[in-house]
Image 1: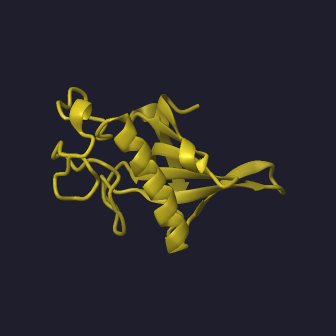
Image 2: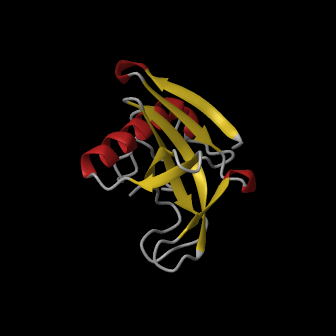
Image 3: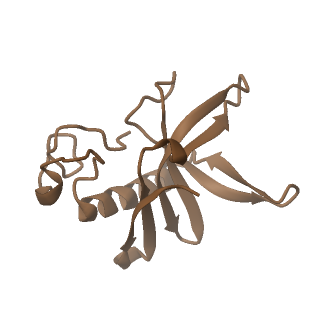
Length: 146
């Protein structure tokens, strides 16, 4: 069970977002489809939207297609044959943007969302911007930008 940091419901869209700390307990191993090599990701957040469940995952180490500080969006799907859950990459740009925007809105409502202990800007980040367009001026850009 992931180490949950906080839970935020974005009321106007009936979307629920859960945030998770970037700690070893929240690492999810995935298999690279090409090499079958195990790749580790932090579970950053989960978004429950429109009857679908999505996970935002950040790589523990830089990868060829995604760097630390960026996230990939996956949709949770039950595998009826094995009675287990699968994480499938979201490839539809519109869906990916909607999920990510719900995450950003909830993060802005939560504070700056950078996850850094002692971030002085978390308390007053609403409406601020450091140029990356996320509404936060903490300067860490450790948010899940992509």
